[in-house]
Image (cartoon, rainbow, N blue to C red; front, top):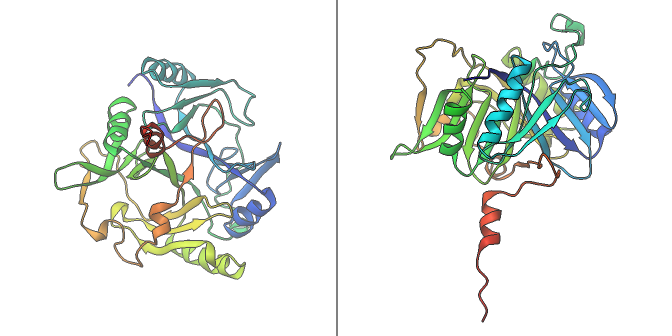
Length: 327
């Protein structure tokens, strides 16, 4: 590849009430509030040495602006812009200073219609990994991955593997070898980007790494004591896929966040992806209660990088193209 994508680095989402969101993410989950500015809250984990990994933007319209990836060098941004433009995909430059604490950034739509962001520079912040006096809630350490629902997983898989240089750690396949879901990575863990089959493009969840499974259990106790028990959607439990010890939560606006611990190293060049059969129930739930219907059916909409309007799913586009019959 002519460019080097390092890792998933941030998500940018709309929320309706910043104070309500602060109580959930900071007071309950224990994220660090770096700054509040221009109707935005900038949050990070205890391990993170940069300004933020999550931006909460006040808006009456719920949605996801971008899934942000860090690249190695500034030149990588120009090469990525040239690449996406050569594919006929929408691109938009945001110059340094346009987004708070961020350098020059490239916003694009990928082949599935997802809004992606690429950047190289972000302001630094104090790394608080040994400030144990600040540990509370889930003791969140760092952003780990995003998982998206798309109508054609194989199309997304091929684009990220063959064009963007991602590697596959695990995948689910049907009996005829069609890829149903895939876990892809740039950093040497199980995933930065996952894809699941469903109505899309939509964001299923963004995930944060915890220091140990006890942090996840402690978070459940804290959530319940603060009145957030109903925000626990699924778990605690363990996935067969990725070996993750997990907890899925819904924030006050319905966005899904996964708290996550327990995956493994994927850095060896001879690492071979793990295949799971679609009918193997252990892939989703190695142990624990089954996922509720909401986990499969409810997702967050993406927003267009130019208009800010909700991106239509493929199913909605097909519905609009149905011919009208005059009786």
